[in-house]
Image 1 (cartoon, rainbow, N blue to C red):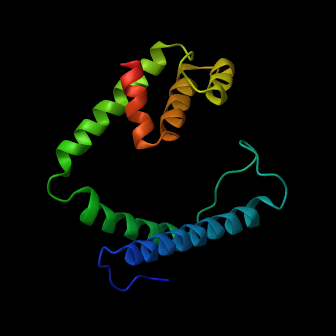
Image 2: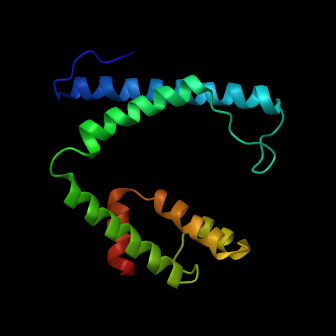
Image 3: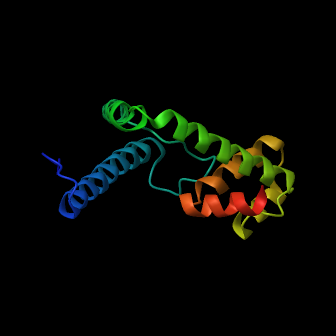
Length: 145
C-alpha cells in the first residue's frame, strides 16, 4: 500500500488517500485488538476502559508524525499561516465560551448543559471546533467574532 512516488496528479492523490485510509485502518485495528485483549469483548464505555496502544503502533505513528512535521508542518512559509489559524481558533473558542453554550450545535448544547466544570466545557468547545471543516470554521468566526 505504500506509495512509491508522487507526481501531484489526481491518480497520485488517489494513491495517497488509499494509503492513508489503509494506515488508519491498520492503526485502529491494532488499538482495538489490544484494547479488547485488555478489557474484554463487552461495551467499551467512556470510563469503563481506556485505549491500549501497542508500542510498535506508537513508534510507527511517531515516525509518520515526524515526517509530516518536517515536510508539511514546519516547511518554510508555514509559520504565519499557523499563527493566523491559532488566532482564529482561539477567537472562536472564546466566543463560544462567552455564549454560555447558546451558539453550540444542538448535539454539543446538550452536553454543555450536563457539564460539571469549566474544564468539561472547554473540552466540549474543543470537540465542537474539531468537528468543523476549515470553511465552516471561517463562517463561525465571521458569525461569532
